[in-house]
Length: 196
Image (cartoon, rainbow, N blue to C red; front, side, top):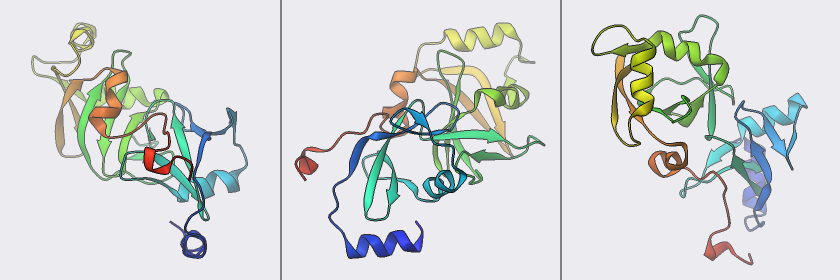
């Protein structure tokens, strides 16, 4: 969090949080009431002050007020750099570690990273395809189809390379991802926050 945010929190510690105003779409675009926020200064400010609370609810800390973010897919949207060697979150932060890799029923790749849970941007699925390995040899349409056909929660026959690591690719249904990866797609006030 930026210094001005910390000062505002110290001065006004009990400002009620906002729910239902902010969103993050599948492409990593910030939304306010469903409309894309396009002003670069606002986008950058949100990205620098974006975090998760202890309950897995992601938010933008706007001075003393927290605005919880409704997620279309995952808290982070990950993009590969031009060389394909580095992943960067939609916030501009670089991923240095990936501890788990998942494949949902639609073929989307979800990664548990040092920054938090992220979905690989649709435009960068080639990045993942170049890094997939199959135990029985080259990855082809049949091995991809077999991986997609696995029930949620099971390991596929595929692995994903990230740096020096080779991570088993686990099937995980989209609806089950928040519980498995520890985030909330549609944050709501907790009972202790109601009426606050």
